[in-house]
Image (cartoon, rainbow, N blue to C red):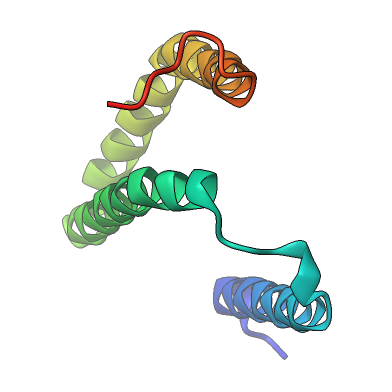
Length: 117
């Protein structure tokens, strides 16, 4: 179809859309698997603002990338190198954050050292 990068992007979005559609169909068929309780409401109170923050951060990076790409090949290449360097530097803190999240979740689930407040 000669769509090049646009075709890859369209295929990715289409495949993810189909995946969401199938997930929603399975979700509707199995209504008993999901119900709101105090833990899920507490998770949503924390998760929704975090998801909004991540969405806005990614949106700003997308706008920044689009702006830098308009400046030419040199600026785009420099921005790409800087992004890869930052990603490499952030590997250790990010890994530590993810591993600590699993410990925190286990302790919250077991009610060890967690108090409502």
